[in-house]
Length: 190
Image 1 (cartoon, rainbow, N blue to C red):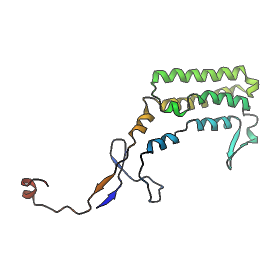
Image 2 (image 1 turned 120 degrees about the vertical axis):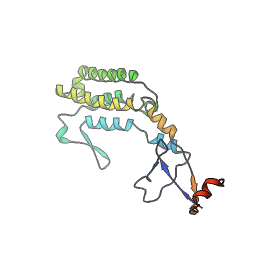
Image 3 (image 1 turned 90 degrees about the horizontal axis):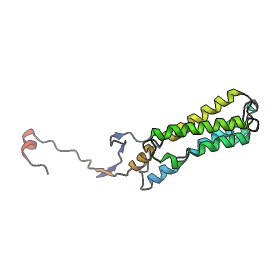
Image 4 (image 1 turned 60 degrees about the vertical axis):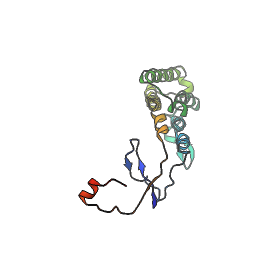
């Protein structure tokens, strides 16, 4: 008798072994839910957006100014304040919440509106050099906020985490003996 691990999707249907494991896969432990929860970090994208708004690029593990973007980038204060608006909804807490569409849309509009007001009011401090930057920043904030809030629609991520389970499937490798049609029909199963 040997053990075999069978990977299944959310409906219990068998799927292929995860790729890039080098043939070695440790079956999920009871800590799988905690491991998945630790990997949900929507605030990480907000930090990246903040640096990108300042005209920085990640090079060899460090954020560096891109000279060509210095006239199109926002100031540190502007990028920081706009990113803070997104952090409110780009969190693990929000991701595992259960929101409805009628809660998501007003919140999304409110955050985008606040960002636009902040940019208008503080355009000099933020380093705004043209009206096109308003639309550019609006689209970035809208997209990130929408995706962050939609993750929690109907408790999608929460359901996924709760659906993680650990199963050991064992089977016997001995081939089944063939029985005649009559033998299998009229004899009780053992």
